[in-house]
Image (cartoon, rainbow, N blue to C red):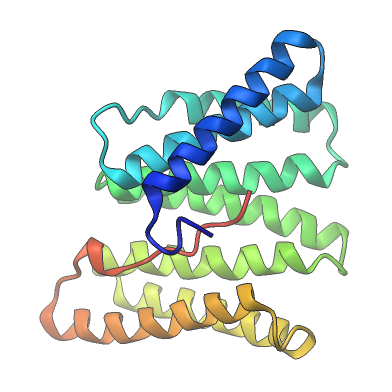
Length: 214
């Protein structure tokens, strides 16, 4: 992923191209739900990348609009895992924006909604390993937010939950690159947490986040 390598500007450009294509599809077929969904996904990606880049034109409203549309689609199709997956990512992006702007409380609320959505998928389909991966990632991310709030014990609890979920996944997916990457992040976060508890402070720029994949 370009975002993971730090190539956020290139990722943003790619998502803007995706948006242009989706806008053309929507213009050609205004009632095409799939085209409209692709447009909202592109808008969500663009919003988060602008915040990650610290752009002055970063605006959370396109992401909020995309999430609201996703919630309406989910309400109309509650058994559809696709919309639940989208909302898992959408809530997580909202949480990340709150975290990047120093709002830990709202960040935790959004990340928790993301976990709840992923858990609903896992509960209805025990073979869905992706939802279990997203749950593990979100526990790790919540641990980061807790660490920044100096809630050391709560952070440890979240990292423990994340590690337990990832270990279980590695038993069935020992060479899965995404699971291995998430596992490496948790180890890195444990190291940073130990440093935090010594210095009694944490720097947000030191903590890469394992964002769910939309």
